[in-house]
Length: 302
Image (cartoon, rainbow, N blue to C red; front, side):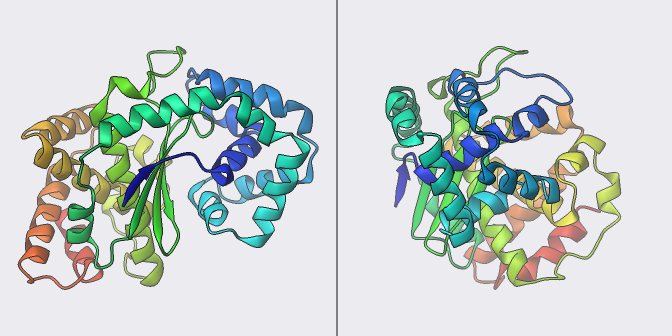
């Protein structure tokens, strides 16, 4: 089942990010425009920066700026984090705040829903992963983070937390309604990111350090600072390309060509070919699992 919705747990965590130093981090190295809802949320929570929950999240960010673990803990209802979320939400009056701003979020949900109606995400995920989740959820995100989407999940559900597409310079982002392929790319990226992350967590040591990492563009390595995260992103690129090609012949190839040229990701063609080989082998029963194939995927990047 695929749904588009809002969820109070990620939205409250977003409010905590707004009260911490995350908005300032996002403006480096190049300032960017944010959605009016993000700007308004930052202003609303400015009076609550001394709340213990803000210090708690700030410490987590200082220890690891990767947001995926925090959001995963939130949707898995981890007791310690949930206690902070609930306390901050009550102190900052977030229930009333969200109610007052609900129309903008409802529009975002409606726009994303219109683009994903009839789209089959499950088939390619079932091909790639031995146990695809029963439920896929897209969470349109008008607040923080504004710079990138995230994939995280529970044992029963995989989430895609996606911001609207960045506009030019410091202008506010484009509405979700303006770009169907952007939504489809982010969704399959995030679902892949979560599911591959689960595979790597269950198979520690599966991806030893590789010289390929040092050959990747510096900005890509800065954005994805560990080898497992780099492999995950390259695998997600392949999944996005193949998925878009299945929906509209050539759409994925155009996307991959643009990304290869603008981001100087010369390994992308090899990554896409390797994933295509993997999916074909899985369909024919020639490849048992992704964990078995990942070393071959890495070898194909050299």
